[in-house]
Amino acid sequence: MSKIRDSWGSRMGVIMAVAGSAIGLGNFLRFPAKAAANGGGAFMIPYLAALLLLGIPLMWIEWTLGRFGGGFEHGTAPGIFHSVSRKNRFIKYFGVIGIFGPLVIFIYYTFIESWTLGYSWFAFAGKYSGLHDQASMQSFLAGYQGLEKNSHFNGIVPAYGFFLATFAANIWVVYHGIRGGIEKLCNWALPVLFLFGVLLMARVLTLGAPLRPEWNVSGGLGFLWNPDFSALRSAKVWIEAAGQIFFTLSVGIGVILTYASYLKKGDDVVLSGLTAAATNELAEVVLGGSIVITAAFVFFGPQETKSIAQSGVFNLGFVTMPLVLNQLPLARLFGFAWFFLLFLAGITSSVSLAQPAIAFLEDEFAIGRKKAVAIFAASTFVLCQPGIFFLKHGVVDELDFWGGTFFLVVFAAIEAILFAWVFGMDKAWDEIHKGADMRVPVVYKFIIKYVTPAFLLVILGFWFWQEWLPVIFMSNVPAENRPYIVFTRIVLACLFIVLGFLVRQAWRGRKLNRQPV
Amino acid sequence: MNAAGLVLLVCSWGFIIFLNIFCFRKVMAKKEIR
Image (cartoon, rainbow over all chains, first blue to last red; front, side, top):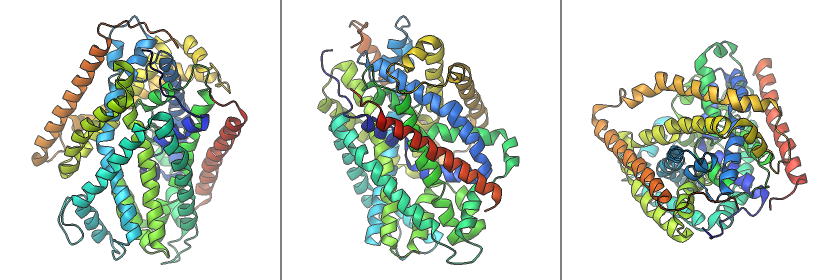
């Protein structure tokens, strides 16, 4: 394995790339909806507790494991796990989840990301500027998604065109590698994203009360931030807060492991990991916590905002926000800024989801980047199709459950246990601090060893019994959608088996004891 | 917006903004990756 691995060009580049991976559509849509539905301002108490006890420790765990594995020229979880426990022949198979998860998320996320590109264009061209109520904007969205033929769209062709453009953009970025593709993209996309975010935030906070005096900005912020402390007595609110932290930081997916594997042995992970997490929180709590709900309140009032917040994140982003922005001067400009912000948040995440599978082919099979990207592009293009054409049958929700929820928590629990208990806390503590620019407070030795794994196991158990069992048994799936869900599960099971087989092949018949470089 | 909401907003935003300033100042002052 003499090939020189790709590497980051600058420290700010890797921070921006990890932050870009973490900042996604959820920061601007999922967070405000969850906070509004779970105690308002009081939600921030379990949210910040989960950030300190779950999110930041997992960030440090993934950065450290990634850099450690990268030292053995392994950029994905199977090799990284094997490097941590070389005597265990089976541990590498747990790492399959670290390739499977991002791959599955990539195959539906790219399609959703393409909606934001499409809507950026529609906003700029004024295609939906004549729509002024929820029903017609929902019809516009359904027509675009190919769910119905209507006066706005006659079929899925425009959506498919934007999907092709988005897919090609993702492949183009990963084709140019870590330094020449992903780092370059994130170095300009993140500042532009924040610029658009601040612009929209400033516009929303200066809306005043255009329709009714009581529907004002202060009331909108109050809708999201006024605390209902009685909500803190509910275990569900604490689990929802922990879940939000978990999803927003992109931990438990495997992408941070891969990104950190391109660091050198003496590069800091403590400060860089904390900075990436802080950047993500700035986008989520400050920008996400002030734009969508406040704007909806000012134009729709408290009752409708409540139902909007409960109607799901797509409704919030693709129906409510364009309606709100339609009513402002310079509607096209602000509409474009909103959807292009979401597109940038999306593409900086999706390229990170592509990287683990590509790194696996490069590192474990010594395949060149161009060929690895070609294999990745061909396979994922085929795998993307069911999500596009069977959207109305719940295929995307099913992919999201397995790739973006179930295996995420399982993988994070495996990582935390592996790091603190298999690698060993003393060794892990030394590894975290190699080249560190700041010391991790010593209380985190206890938190990483006991609190984080326990927290994850509680979330895993709670979700499993409360929410996942009905999904697994398809209790809420309409009968006509069941064949599509079963088909999706068969495809996912095959994908998992193929990845497991590839791991077996990669380790077969070659010397496994790579020396640190 | 009531007083408790304002306090939670200011504290949450304050904490996040402080964390960002703290981190980025340190990042700018420390060594570049190799």
